Length: 328
Image 1 (tube, helix red, strand yellow):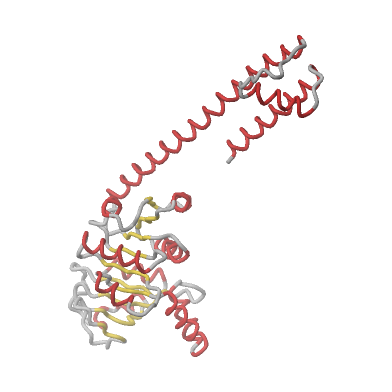
Image 2 (cartoon, one colour):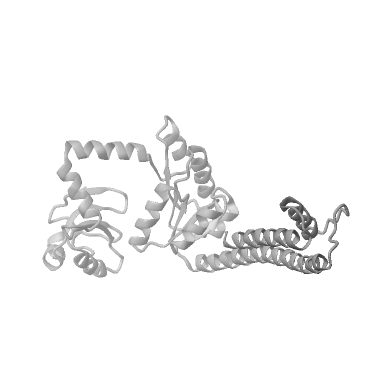
């Protein structure tokens, strides 16, 4: 835009100077001077009107040289912009491929609308690696300005997903605008990586969730249903909702609800909750335990044993949870 503004301003200045010059040196009217300037600048020369005074001819020589220089400058800027854009795009794609080649267990976020932006923000806050895929060049530029890894292309395209590292990805989040696009992305992603965790958005229309699950989605979320449920909970049980919000973002209560996986080398394997001394050493509450087979134990008893690959849902301060995570 800046270059276009400069070129437009120079062109208008050239017309104004030329018109005034011919009015002074050739005694033309305003429109006559404008006409003579335009046919001189564009080297048309119809021959119906030509400079007749010596000063007018000298002025025409300088005007021709200036206009030719202006045309050359304009073409150079256009060429520079095109080449600059191509080179920038080339380096961007090369840089992105280098970054993706080093990624492992990252997430692919397909679509950068209002929902996609919030998802990326939370992933960034929680230090999760991710690549955003969008087919709009302006949106891709916006993503890069936020220092996110971005790839321009159709998320349902095999080559795009492969370039974004779907083979090594931990999960894919599809939040593009239509159910049909989300369905196609889900189907393509499942075919490329059968073990991939796929979270996809649904409009909430009848039968859409079933079709997305059949296509290979691991989880289907309807933002409208979640929003409606949350608004209802704020009316029915506002204190509980506020408490959950605070724990999910480590807010005013300095509390955070987090999930921690028990590694196969953890010293807590085989111990029950009392023997692990999690509450005593870290002041962390174990709210639930998810077993490797998917079984969920809510409010586990003190005698509940901890096994490898268990996921502990814990509540505590960020520092305490971080300390427990190191032991697990």
